[in-house]
Amino acid sequence: MTGAWDSIKLLGAVSDSGETFFLPCAENFNSDTTIRLLDALQTEFGEKICVILDNASYFTANAVQEFVEDTPIELCYLPRGSPELNPAEECWRQLDQELGNRLFDTLDDLRDAALSALDRIEVPDVLLC
Image (cartoon, rainbow, N blue to C red; front, side):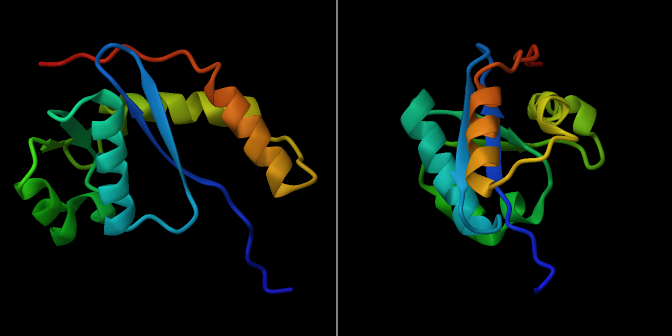
């Protein structure tokens, strides 16, 4: 036994019109994952997008900055230590509330429950200033 836990990793987004987008990730989050997310967001919401992110290192990496240089993607960063400003945090809170303190027999059972719960999330209001 290694002590390592199997896990499910998701990145999520909420649009100004209340649409949600969740990207399952096999690996730990890094700049490549962020670039994949930005590419998926462009595919989902249109080429010209403004993406508001927190200051996680995988969002602020040089590779991410270089990727967006030649695209119509605009990146804006939330102030450090302000998860209450991030509408995706409310989605994660709701997901935790629905799935927390439950035992799942397999990682596949957890994945199925999580993806099903994402469809029932009440999307928070997104205020653009």
